[in-house]
Image 1 (cartoon, one colour):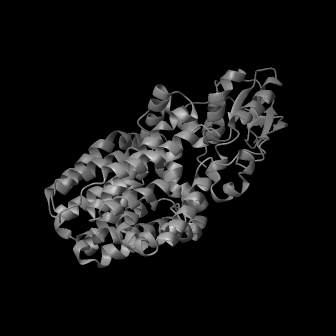
Image 2: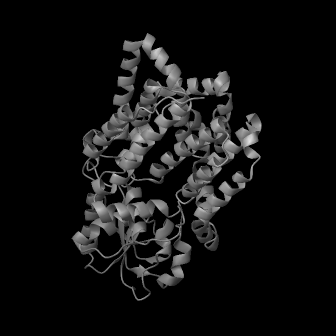
Image 3: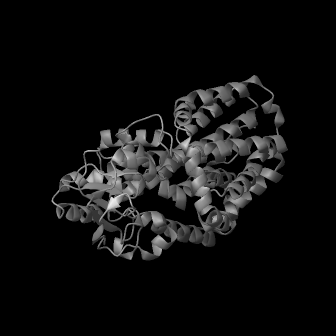
Length: 480
């Protein structure tokens, strides 16, 4: 099979258009709560954290060191990852025989679909994960098409980097392996290069795996908690969200991609990609995984469907491009900070991550006012890492001390000193018998009418603790 030429110029135009939009909007609203956590983790670099491997905090550290500790500076990294994803998705279309038009259509789908826009706008573990998943899809297709076993080394390298960023890629590897065993070609499995690829993946991931084992594998604790708390809701929403996380307009495209991979004789070698998606979805339904987890694989299937979609567009040009325009406009509004914060209410109902980028400076000011009213002596203890990250970032301009939190890796970064026996400011924390004489002193209002997770957060002042912090700290830890 001779591949078409890669449409470098047109695909670069698509990637540049996406990058221009993202750059123009990068500084709107503000940091997301997870980004504030990544900033804090990046200042405490380690081989692992309780809820994630080390790669995304490292990227946060590098981005802010080079471009500044601002939303726009931090978001240079996801912008570049988003552009790279656009190119890889176009390469997937080419790998499956797609010509210039199909490659550009696949690139445009990747650039303008909803979840990829979110992960290309703000730094998240999914920002790199999306690129790695579609890259593993491309490498797998190249391996299957050529039969060249040395591509197992490339697959191992991608999987190893993925494990250093987010362990979810292991489920993709398992789904692809099960699909190969089910529908072949099984010949690619009968080589020592497969073992070499596995060894390379483990070698790349070893430091973070060792850290997790040495710390009782907290990632599994966090994952089990997500399944226990949200598993039922995730299962209910799983199928409907598959239809909208890219765009409802793209559903016929990735369905056509599955059909093409399964039925087209010339692509029989690629059938495993069509099978891997339902296998992955079945596993996620069983474990209660979040509905967005398999979406990067849908980008690969969308690229597979680009060729038949292009043929359909040629016969239905006006209608097709009209649908595409409507879909793109909806994706931009739902995924990116296009609207003023006061108009976010309907958007937050569909994408809560928009609201989590609003109000953190105001939140810190609420805490600062309460802290100063106590004579500038209180220890600040927050309920979650977003609150702690916001106070750590914005607090110095208000004279606030380093906050503490027993949530996620903030717990690992230590309790207040035992000689801090004075008052305690509880930010969103429900008082327990660990704290004495607590009274509410503030309630946060972002002043923007955005109903996000911190709107209405209560701030309480307690006279002190009932035991030294070192004794209380183990019982205060929480992951959810």
